[in-house]
Image (cartoon, rainbow, N blue to C red; front, side, top):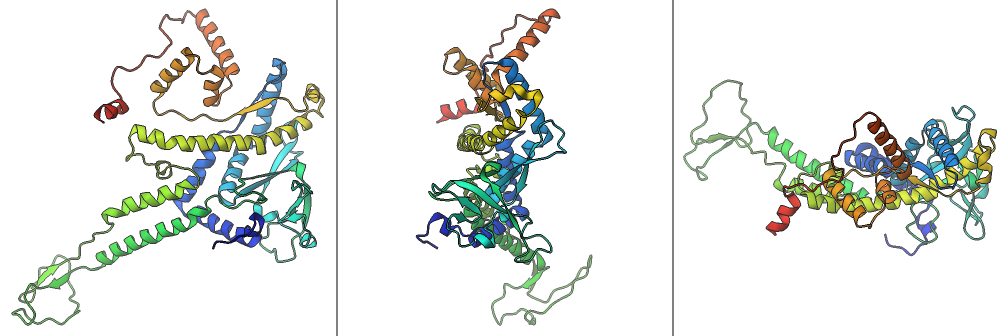
Length: 439
């Protein structure tokens, strides 16, 4: 229904609760929805971010990067980020509280506690406050200054209305990750909201096709005649049932034949309709249809790569947003916590160190072709080693140091050869060249 409501008025708690429940049900019970959300989370977060500190002290950079990596493993940061990305697609937003965890197996006891969107809600005592928008307390400029989090999930067993207490979390200790679709929006809606009716249509069509096939299969046989009405065929009672025994020959009334209804389902348009619906479903997350189905049999090499370009660009945008909204907050809190320890006293002078995060790169379908393109870009000075390694999710300085160690060891062991290291183009034409020539 079209309306002229503001962003917060249109996304009331009741509206978002209904959308969350529908989205969660669809993701939990639909293989395509579940697979799409898992794929997006896996491609966006991958095995987790890798820190590169960019201070002038290389030894400090090495120590901080190593310790942050060990801490990330201790708190299982990659898994929590993937959960947050899945919640962002299904619930519309993800919340994480920066807490102190004494049982953590690392000197830095900072940890992340994920909470569902249902638990961030306005308490009864603040319902009429104009500065509180569905659990988020705002200052005069609209910036969050606190979050009201329910102590228990409102859907937990034994929790009734009025029995849930809340506590206020300062904005500095809360990470709120969501996509802002409208100005003035403070809460998120499920990213798969536009696809929810399409999932229902796909389910209805599939059930209709299955029902037609089952109906046709239910008929064991039918009697029919080519004789005209009131012809010479022996009279037979309409809709009469004749029981047939297995491996038994029988006779039929004069003028009648025995036949079966052909099960012509699924129809030829079923696969095409299903693929079209899945393509429309994937657009809300910018996922191509061959990624949703896991089937690229109807794509050639060129069209497959072209379809993935928009998807890969959306992943880079999502990783950049994840880095700013989540990882920078986590790293700042980690630096502040680590600087309190005597072992990390060097960090006390690094209030806001320059840094960046590397994410898993996307594997190329044709590694030889990509290597040739990479060599050409480097030879023509149109790229840098830092950029090429970053595309693979690697730190160029660490990779070059490792490569230098390997070459030195190979030289000591007499394994250095005079073979050229620059890749050469394959002699045979690939599928793209043949298609271009045919066109």
